[in-house]
Image (cartoon, rainbow, N blue to C red):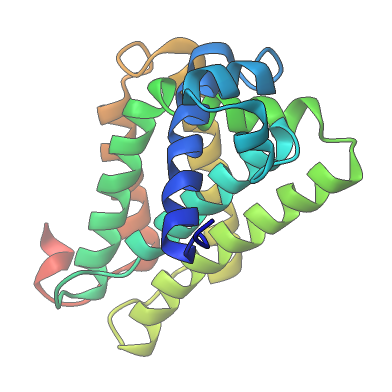
Length: 207
């Protein structure tokens, strides 16, 4: 029997994850089962269990890949000022918040909040916070390093506040709906507040 290459293994894994993602979005984390994932993938139980031992393994791999994609999206794809990069970041967050109800975000919050007392999930909560905080801090720090930001508040406090605000608005968008919470208006206000705190230099300041 020919040996399966890493590329082929990754293709199978991606196929399973695609099926699992649709199951989690449709049913939620707690209600979904490995049986659902296997059925949606069109593979045998053995074919799926060869890659993932349980539902949580599948979900954590989905989250890990999503976090990696988010981290890559923090890096600008073309030269721009620090403030332009920050505006771009907030624009992406608004888009994600608007689309959150149809993605993995509800499942992620369900998984983390319901299981917050579990040591492993607690560790994931802390890991996620460090990753999100670190990426946002680096974004602001880049503006400081380039001499483009002159923050009126502690950068650490500002970034913690921003993380808390974004998590809160994601939850509100999921539970209440983007239109009802006036998502666009809230992000417009957020941008204005961030500008007043970061005080970007140059032409961006007057936008």
